[in-house]
Image (cartoon, rainbow, N blue to C red; front, side):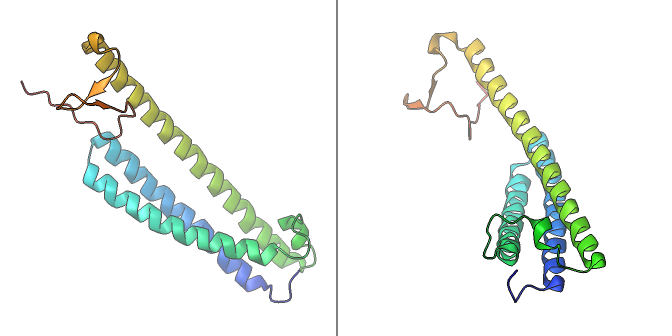
Length: 160
């Protein structure tokens, strides 16, 4: 292990990552609710918050990786802390497990949210195909130009 590696620094980094993931998870729920409620300004605001927290998380993750990378890049976290006293090793192991659990929880939330968005896009595309079968699944602008079917920012004018 590198000489500058410090137990306290590692605890600070791991704890910081855990707290950031919990905060991101809370905001992620607000993003999901904003999408469900079609509150796009709130969605934009919350997404910006998540991006800022994500940048901070990446910074901490890079610090953590630097702490545990040494001569042997393949050395695992647990192998890196084997030389520490038992109480420090147990605390770091518990923090690392909690970090991994928060990461897995965040991954599951993201996958569920992406599935929801994918289903909504598929439903919208199917709906448009059912209403306008002559268009063959193609979308057009007001001027008649063909547009992508990714449905990222589509607005339907239902006033006639």
